[in-house]
Length: 268
Image 1 (cartoon, one colour):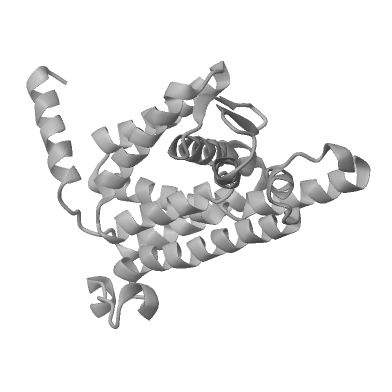
Image 2 (cartoon, rainbow, N blue to C red):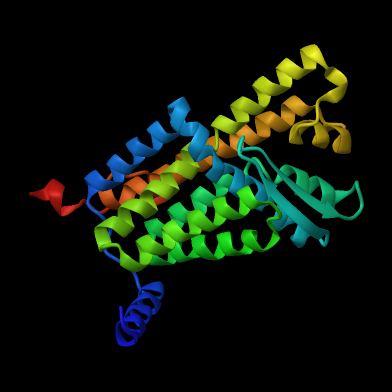
């Protein structure tokens, strides 16, 4: 690709960031949802794709650490899909509480935000927002595996948005949104299973986000788990409605308004 082609492609991306794109065919929206469900539900694949959830989880901690005035020191991502975000500040108070509670809701809420962009037919904007968020996380990642994981994911999204056809870009964007929405619930289930196991064996060493919040607020950890689950399920229902309504004509009044457009495929 020569310089002129590079400039033209850059101008095209910039133009697409400020305009809407045609919604994909209904079958692509449904198919990407099914693929995302497999990526979340099938164990061997989940052990790989869960890295994406960990990035979003730690990004949630990092964002609220900054928003509440804490000093963000580092983000570490491990090959077992665990992660750690370290920030400095008072070890108590509202800032610490918000920082601790931001991790588990982050993937589902990010998926909901992406679904809103896709529902507004902003496919390119959604992809480049993903790249920008990954770049922000990359700045604070402090281990080799984490750097590789975040950079590789960003490179894949960039390649799709730069070289992919409209259909490829739409399919990848909808797959990402579906995945985050569906993946929001599984870590919460895993959280409670892990808590239950550790509470039986070593109750004094339970140090999950929910148990940290319990110590900070004196609200039982199980209630925090239930809150995380409620946020994930709500985001999935609302976000799924946004993804389906425009492309398939499935009308959800609370989300879509009183009427929903019916795709041409259903009219023919």
